[in-house]
Amino acid sequence: MKMGIEQNRGVGKHKVSNESKKNKRRQRKTTQVQRLYEACKDVFADCEPGIVPSPDKVEKLAAVLDVMTQADVGLQPEMSFFDSERAPVITYLQLYECDKFSIGIFCLPPTSVIPLHNHPGMTVFSKLLFGNMHIKSCDWSNEVDKSTDCTITKAGDPKSRPDGLHLAKIKVDSDFTSDSKTSILYPSDGGNMHRFTAKTACAVLDVLGPPYCDTEGRHCQYYYEFPFATFPDKNASVVAAEEREGYVWLKEREKPKDLCVVGVPYNGPKITKK
Image: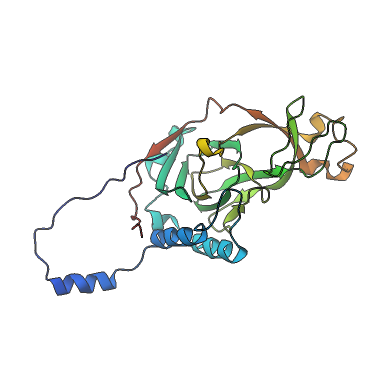
């Protein structure tokens, strides 16, 4: 989604000497948002869908995100975006988007949920700026159900099976706070499908490389989730009994009707494109 950014067009009443202006420019520090943009530009410069940045570049971007706070993007928990009366409405603030990457913030009131969804061919960095959030994520299982010949394709998605169910392995199922490190998921690893549940008001900064694009096949797909024991006769011989709690069955679904994400202009520190 694309949205405008309001700018302050006010003009000062007093003239300032050119020398004074130069001094102020020298003293002006690079904002953390600008550092994030420049890191993203470097990290995703040569990436294509499904191509993961090198480990050193992943570490570089994660290091920038790890130290970011709500103040860096001009957010406060008292803002109306986070009012409990707004739930389940989620607000999205877009900082930047190009064909290589996007930077945005999801503002979640308490109890609101971003349901289980995927990120096809994408590397995603998520940093919780404030609040307490439960994240559950999973990847398609590499196990093969020989009875239905269900395997994993190179793109990371399983081939269709008659009942529409696919086996997935749980990667993360825990609470996160602003002290938590940046969460990173990859096209076929790290929990490419995830669900966010706001236990308190939350703001999560998301970097996607590349961003969703329907025309290029990067469509956001949502899923129903079922415990492994719901269908005990399926893959029973593939997954050991003591490991079955770490697996779930997923089935594609339409976008949930109660999911409401509203785009609002971002008014925090601006990004200077280079």
